[in-house]
Image (cartoon, rainbow, N blue to C red; front, side, top):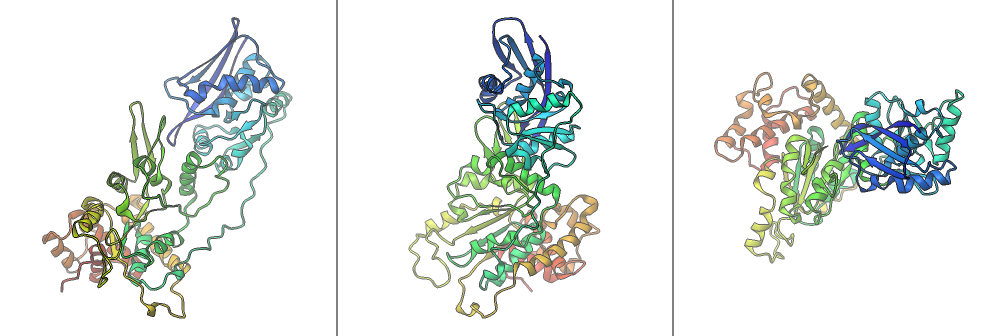
Length: 513
């Protein structure tokens, strides 16, 4: 009898741990035991590995088989351990040749009873961890080849069956290496056409707020009656955001690898994600959760992109309040009895709200039949602490017929060009401190030299703070918007108009003279 081993990866959220899969075969009654804190799916691996090996022409010996997943103190979850367990056991039995090579390769995949390999979720973050730990070869099902190949420095081997993997190692004994998967076909260029800001009629103030939001990463609230273009504007925000960098795109794709369909991640899409959960969504659906290990929610799926809450006051108060901590920290922390999971959540929040439950309480409209107490309760759903974290709060009025001009509004491409230029200025300004946009710069940095503005420029803001119309957090957020306004205008330092713009767009204040 003998000992065999190979490598795999277990995930706790997006954090991976390299796992030694050790198999020992000894004399005794037939038994197949798995140790190392396997969950139900992993513990059922023997019921899949035995028939898969038999139908692949390499039956397991009728002896006592013990598999250890080390480190044994970390939970192992999912059916992706089927393939590494089969490889380790076959190496221990002497059937798998080139066992020393197998011990240095990460294997991921689920086995069907007929020996076919099925794709699994979480391959991208698993391969990223393998690369960080110095592994250079991974074997995955064909469905997962494309996402595994997104990781640099890794040779990916895509297998259709267990018999194919066994054949590779048999050939490797004579000096033939494992055959790499074909190189992926890289798209010539992703079509970003579709929704365009030119489709939106009128709404100059809301368009200005949208551009500022994209420039500095500022959260945005749009309120107004139904049908004025709030949803249209929000859906077009991603068309003016800069494309993601490779590292940012890998972050967002790693989250998709955990939550999407198997094989959904096929190429590196650098378009910022746009996530719009329904107002009936639960706290777990928005923040993340579930049985066993907590999965990412909507706020993590929107990482590096836009989280849009349409009809925001219709969301449960508990769902809205759970946004407060991730807005500040850029991550969501899900604590469970036995573990704590952290997911990135650096999103741009866009809220849309009606003025009242029926939506008709605006201007001189006389169709609203909502009671005053219903209107107050509706508005109170967006609490003060949440709104205090939203930099831009604008009213979107009904569109007048005069807005239907012959010439369409400014296109997304034109706005995106200005945003990209302003973002480059911000990146250069904050490069030494590790910040990319004005929206994440700590307030004390903007209130102290060398970035403190002259008193003449902040006079209107100082008066609003002294009068209690804004909080200190609001003061800092107005300064951030002022810097973004200056960057869009090509100014080195914000002036009085930039500060006034930040204050007006935050609370709809009339600027005192």
